[in-house]
Image 1 (cartoon, rainbow, N blue to C red):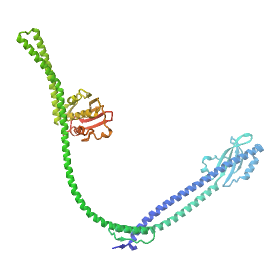
Image 2 (cartoon, helix red, strand yellow):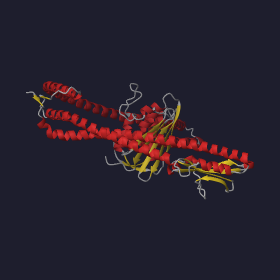
Image 3 (cartoon, one colour):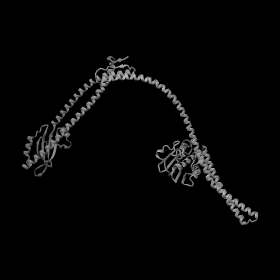
Image 4 (tube, rainbow, N blue to C red):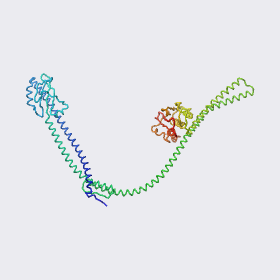
Length: 542
């Protein structure tokens, strides 16, 4: 059912509150703006008037000084130094008791003695005013002006006279008062007009306000009167159209909501299925990542095996050669013994060669045993996450030894600078894995396209509970856009060419999760790279 807001009684209380509020705001805003503009115009006009008056005074003073100076000089040339006639002339011309014009004139010598005075001159001359800022003197009503004057015989004296400004200042004050009265009258008229206009506007606005409250309460069938023929009537017409549009839209939205609920149910079901598939894919990716990490560790163990084969080959080969030599000597001495041709010198030579061969075999086998023991310790550490106390320098040296065959006969060098007394209670296999990956990373990526290069491992204690180990090379460096991604899993610049992007990710995970430390990288293209591993001497409990 359509309703009209035509009952003024129902709007009385609301109308009063809204009218007073909006009227005061509109009136105050307009009145303040008008007052500011009016006062601004008044101040500008007053300043302009004051400036013009003071400029006029300055011009009159300048002209008066020139005129009096010329008059005094002419009188001196005509009558010698007799200024009595000139004094009589000035007394007749001046108005000593006036409030405008020149009221006294005094002429004197440079030593201060007075030659002539006319008008209301005082016995003791007042201090002359500063003509660069004479506004205060003008407002006081009297300006004392002093200037030089040419006396008889080209003597330089002084001229002082007083200029009264009382009438001029009084006229300015009267003009200011008239402007204030006019401004106040205009402000009062504007206030009354704005107040009446505000009451008229806010009464119609109160009807619009009540209509909006009714619509907010759900009465969309409400309509307001459109009479009046002004802008507010247009607002009322547009408001009624808006109410009709809202009512139609609400019916449309209700239908859409029902349709949307059905869609949400279908989408929720689809989303649940997608989440299950996503969880399954994440699980598969985690398994794939674990497999790749294990493959990375197996690759490290493969490097250890290759290192064992390469490093042990030399001492075993030496022992085999020495054993073959001893075997030939034994056969030779046995042949001579069977023929009864053994001499004392031949026996002594045989014994010496056997001793030397045995010594070579012993040294070679001992070296092979030491290498096997070192390789065994590294292999055990890397294939298990066993915690133990170990010497940092020894562990790093053993790790380097397992990889030395990869660059032994090249122009790549690796230098270590590690204190011999640094002992850790941590995971040596994890630490060896870190530097195995860093060395391989430099050989594969850092020195790509290069025939030579230097690597260095340096360690130093930080206070008493931490050690900072840095690995640096002078290779190609890392592009700035890749620095923040090098520790991400599967990030590699050689993807599809033998790189799986897990080497540095494994380094980062071991440093944080197993050793309880942190790793940073510093690099610039063409300037090499530095990886800084900061770990505690005692690893946290995993």
